[in-house]
Length: 256
Image 1 (spheres, rainbow, N blue to C red):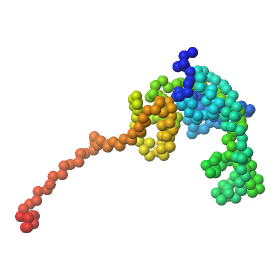
Image 2 (cartoon, one colour; image 1 turned 90 degrees about the vertical axis):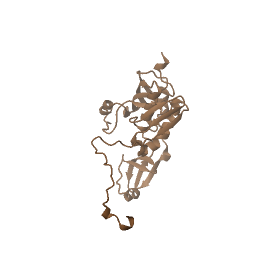
Image 3 (cartoon, rainbow, N blue to C red; image 1 turned 45 degrees about the vertical axis):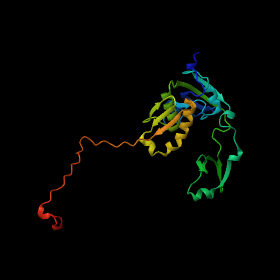
Image 4 (cartoon, rainbow, N blue to C red; image 1 turned 90 degrees about the horizontal axis):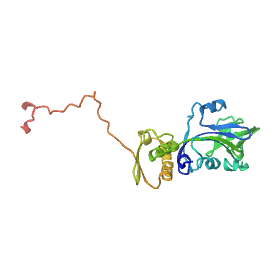
């Protein structure tokens, strides 16, 4: 088997996958619109398509990462990931009881299953009793063994494809970016949207780290261009202003 047909650390790939809770065979995530619809988790706001991924970047569960490294292109795999290599064990310290008055202050009526955010933590309400609300801040996948069905559908073959994949992975799109690569540097001309998008301000540091992982220690330059718009063809040119001739009688006596 050619090494070009296998995935290695540092490769930028395109990945299809579906993830299930093993015990109940419940689907919790997928890149397939049809599978999402068949399992009643379809989200009309979501984009269903293979995702770009930099192998070894640690953005996915370690058990899945290990399985992807060394996988063959366009071959479907089914693996089991123990919870120790997924979301980890449940932590009882992440289950808290909160006074229902704290919800009332925010004009919120808590109910079992409601998502709740506190101090930048996302939790789920698991019980509502007289005056008390129990919130679980554990990951919904904590303590659960997972099953993944995945296929690596492609692998970037050159620097341009690697950069495109990293931009999609870290920023969500590569549209509008103009890229040039030399032996020592990567220059990326930013689309206008990046000048005003706070998401780009956070994403660019991930982009830098991932570009260096995938392409080595090149200098990375992000370029903002501000180009003066040319006048439209149907716009009249500004008329040349010609000084008005002043009649002799209009000239003040002291200037004659």
